[in-house]
Image (tube, rainbow, N blue to C red; front, side):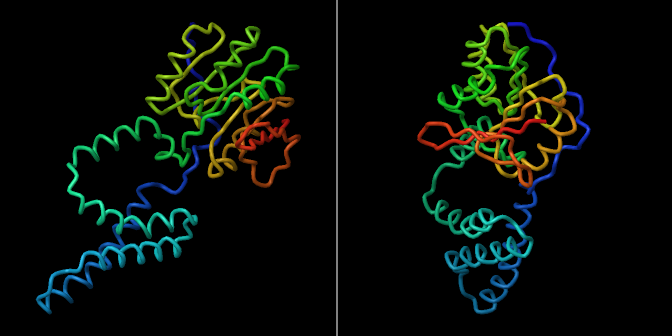
Length: 265
């Protein structure tokens, strides 16, 4: 398979900044310091041992309060409330720390996008690929780009069915990138790239597909409007662009009740 250089020139818009994991970690740390700064002196003066179960729940409550004050999404509030109590509970199991390191590495290899951009791994299914084939059937000189391509669930069947088209996939999680690279290696009309979707130039593509999350959609739509040419098609799986009316919406006949939001530039 020919490997052309990926389109990695900086986009006109800067990559968006979301709820940074460092910010969430800072909230947890602030909650921990706030509770311990009161609890340790109190129980120290009384010469009593710190009650860790109650302390963990207090840290969780303060962290959830801080998350509310800083206007974090609802799921972050829940995560902050549960983190310290769950961490204390797991510590009672006396599990070798090496297992946690191994699990963290494994999750990073697969779910890197969730850490760096709040974009978890969503795999498009076969009915969705079939629906995309129908939506692009009349597109001549098809130049299709999959942003956050996972393991190639979309570009692999589409490239096989449309030898006349050119398909490009961009993925940044190491494990999924490797799987997708191996799957598409024999397809001459499919280019598989390691890259950042925010630094991928959309100018040369007439169909761009994304299955990301609600978080980046507004920023991605701004990038799409700036870089894609008039007449091009942007398709978002499941997540509509806030404040923009879709040109059409395709309901996929699958168990997920997938919806493809199509935006004609």
